[in-house]
Image (cartoon, rainbow, N blue to C red; front, top):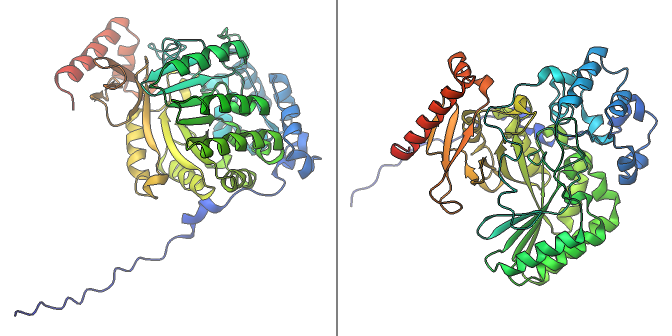
Length: 458
């Protein structure tokens, strides 16, 4: 018998890691809010009370500007005042959120970018933008229910949130009317809810309901129990999810509103007893949004056995580099939040400065995938304009980087249709920016992209 040679291969030693690899564990602690003059005398017990946070939440531009007076130059305040008149979303900012913004450089702060508009940063809306760009109302068989996917529906229970994001996809309905938008009414209304429950019960293919709005954070405890119980006791429903931005902007509610949290737990326990899944979906976009307070709130969910997943939006200047996104993903995993989706920014009125390109998303996804466990790696998706639903960002039929047009299909949602996503015009070359200014050229570019998708898909 021939003896096999002995391979004296040295062990594969890895070099020591740089300590910065553990930055995701470094959560903001202490009484950081005292840096804001308006909150300098607020003690921890008060700041951690959800009732105080709600009472002191700022709804008016002048109140916001008064809270930060002395922290920023006058030019910034004037810029923001003009920004609110141009924005489609009303202002709503919690003291917690206001305390996380770096007021020494507010123009570039990733939280300011998301919630407080500056007129000088506005860009013209994309020529193909519509107020309800995802076509949610077109897929609504009854008011406030979007039934797009065969087995899943989106239940828009109410039209308010604990904070209003500049980039909100539902700026057509969420919040008060603004100078720019008269909102569709989706207020909490039990007669409207009854129409939704009846429709869901009438469609045996529906198994999965997302409870959103607005924001389920703003539901009363008895409403949470009522809605959750009704859905879970509907025979065809197997899964429900409460969707909320709240954990990112007011984690104090989870820690101090025991009635609200108990209601979530009651619904979760009922689901478990019936063999049905109840989850909570939240919305962190930047690692700065995750503090020691967030970690304690998430630990309460974890101890109650409630799964929390996250859906981020890819935002220019906020999380559009591989380093920023990787840090966010790792920090979420550290506090037991499962990264679920990263959405390519929808075409939203008044938020063009926050959008990025499909190419940016593809490159970031490549980097993030493999940086941590697969179950803690988000899927990057385009929510196809016009009602195609969520498509993997790299699953386009064609992507013409010159014109910024990507074309997607959705065979199980709307077979035979093509859905177009458009990169922000200012990110294109001067040649293509000029073409987008000409309606005739717009038509030519769209026709070229559709022709390639039909006849030469990737």
